Length: 212
Image 1 (cartoon, helix red, strand yellow):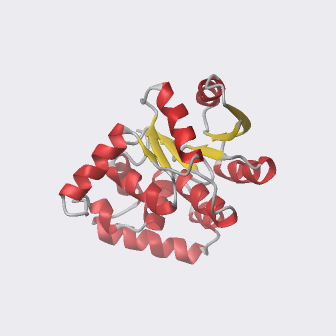
Image 2: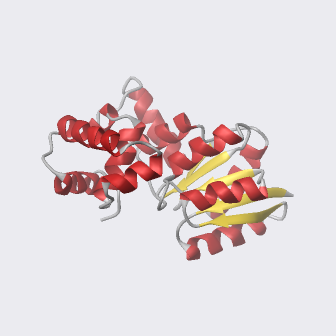
Image 3: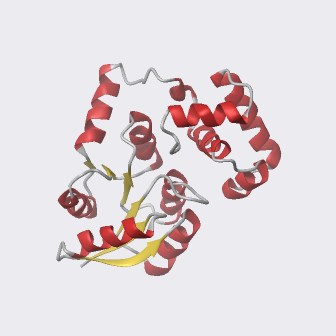
């Protein structure tokens, strides 16, 4: 049996995912988590064969969870399961080390297939993710979005500022100083030509970085 961990902040979503996974017949859910830190603890305690992680979680997002899990267990296959289809998320998930990327509007059997595939050591990208990457290649390997000028950490800080997190909360989440967070904020405002956190929040919403 393939041992699977599910990390998503919505209980109803996790319940649906559990049914899909366990109906596969050759896999079982050994752990669930509702936020980033509990996902890391659950993986340490239950040692899953595959982790299915949502990008948009409280505390630590899916990209940070992926990076930290792979620091401890480099051979753990991780599938990013998200509502986001934008190339930014696909590329950054792969850069973080994810073996799979699937959107929440994908058919249930795709998740089962994705788990089996990454467990076997192969990558799995949904049709939407594949199309996003193809468009990126067609543009010469670079996107034309202003988001491409941001590092992954800047993107993470941007999301948290847009969600109303304080500099102290952001510093605690990423184990960095408050001064460093303020530096990231200054860079974001300058790169994006924005004036304050309200405009950062509006920008994040318009670019589908957070839900409206």
